[in-house]
Structure formats: structure tokens, C-alpha cells
Amino acid sequence: MTASEYLDRAEVIALGFASLGGDVLIHRNAHIVGPGNLSIGSHVRIDGFTTLVCADAGCSIGDHVHVSSYVMLVGAAASPWRTSAVCRREFACSPPTTTTAATI
Image 1 (cartoon, rainbow, N blue to C red):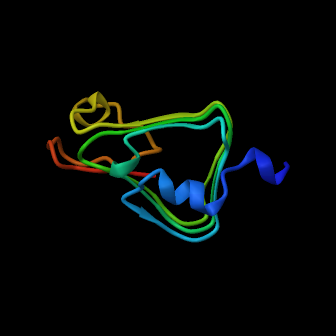
Image 2: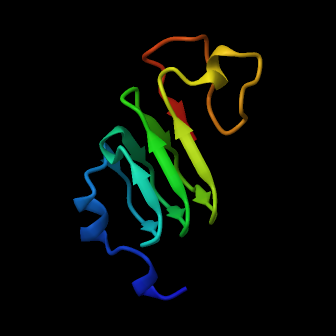
């Protein structure tokens, strides 16, 4: 891992996250849709070739989280994961609502 593979702090701030903790590493090849709807805690690493999609209801990545390469995380207000019997362990699932946020 070289420093140039990851965005520097100013570049991460410029993405416009809803909130941002300290010690956050985001690989230059990570794809983030809806960064204004995403809150990121401290000590978070998001590796390359990762896709994060956050809808209007919002998504949250807590502290001390590593999102590995080739992972895709989708948080949407009308997610079928919340409205069916199948509930992905990656998300905090709750009764169906259009305002529930996904938490990682």
C-alpha cells in the first residue's frame, strides 16, 4: 500500500460526506454514489474496486471498519432486504419504512 493509492484528507473532505471521522482511508479506485448521504466514523479503510451506494435515507459506516476490495454495499430507503424475510447481516434491519438508514 502506497500513500498515493489512497485519497489524502483534503480529497476525502472534498467528496462531501454527511460526516467524517478521523483516520479515514479511501482508495482512489473506490466508487461512492451519494457521498452526501454517507456518514463515516473514525479509523475506516475503504479499499479499491469497492462500490458504496447511499440513498436519501442515509448510510452510516461506524468506527474501526475495513471495507475490502470488490465489496458492494447498497443502502436504499426501499431496499428489498428490509421488506422481505431475507435481511443481510451487513445492515441494521428494521421494520419497513422509507426513512430507515442503513448502518454498517
